[in-house]
Image (cartoon, rainbow, N blue to C red; front, side):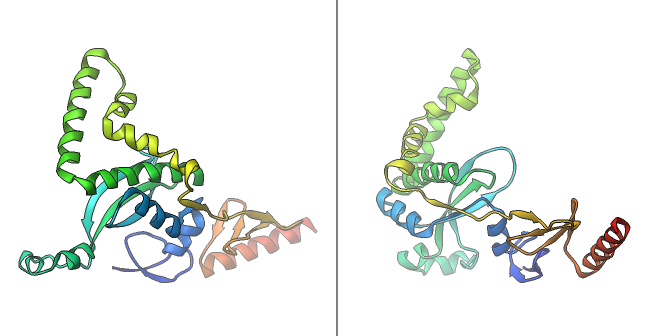
Length: 229
């Protein structure tokens, strides 16, 4: 689905209100693709890994499993005729990381979720069945002891390994880069605030996006300057 970015008016494909470039500018971090490739090689991950940023105040990160790319054929008869290499080229590990995290925290969480991707890829049946079995056992213990699930789930063996691998951020290399945030600089004796990153004009808390609102902002600025004189 083709959309128009609400910020820069560029056409793009996706479900967001903003194009990838504008989302990248607004986020405090982005994935270092070269470092991600090295991390996959270190963990023995052969399937492509795709990382998306997620909003909200809940989870810091999540591994969603292996998914087929949107361009993959949906007809089972067509998929049955594809070779393993052709099918593997259309598959990817899907990981989401919270956009609110700092670059350092995002890197550690990404190492954590990459470990789950490696666990799944190396033996998906053992991962799914083993995780579910340990999860059920620990939940049953929590019902008796009253231990919060937010801390108890970390005793799952797969989580223990993933948490330990968060230290690879320091031991090997980080997986994210810091974005130059959209810093605001105020012009002396001028009611506008100008964004140093994207050139947007802001009047107080009013963000001036479209041409009509830009003209209204300019008129308001002129009115304030005239009144001040």
